[in-house]
Every structure is written in C-alpha cells, then in structure tokens.
Image 1: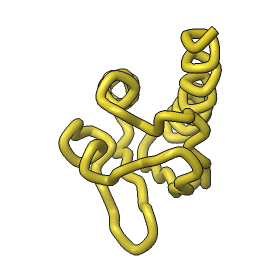
Image 2: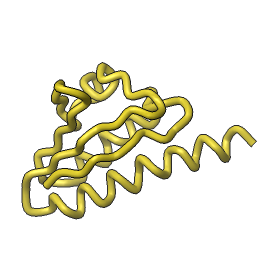
Image 3: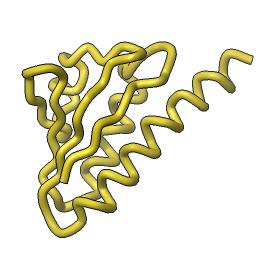
Image 4: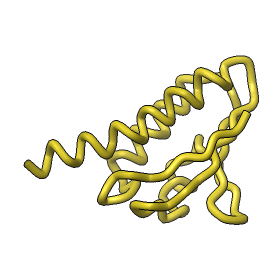
Length: 92
C-alpha cells in the first residue's frame, strides 16, 4: 500500500518529530519505507529519516507492506499532520 503525504510542519521533520515518527513506525509489523523524489528511505531508521531532509512542503510517498499496512499508513499520515499542529501550538 502507498500513500502520498506532504510535510506540513513549518520546521520540517527535524530531530524530535523524526524520532517520534520512527518510534511510531516500530509499533507496526509492516515493512515501511518512503520515497522523496527518486530516493527510497527506510522509515525504521532515524538516520535515513533525517538524511532525507524533509523540509516543510516536501512530498513523500509512504509505502507499507504487511498485515497492518493500512493501519500503519493511517497512523503515520495522522502523526505527520499532528506535527504541524504541535509546532503551531508551541509558537503561540
């Protein structure tokens, strides 16, 4: 399963949200990767997530393969949206 999402956090996916993203990925049994442009990254690796340089406005394609793929994509998409909300609340 695949899903395209946009990074909406004004600060991008910096260290703290990237770590939370990877922790969330590890709660699922599916193999989860993402593409940014032509490059593919493992969503299980904090180093790969950070090396993708996911700035605000970056579009990525999440891919999950496994029994809980749909649930994983739903939760990760929601989490990426919540990062935008968290940053907005912290800037107030």
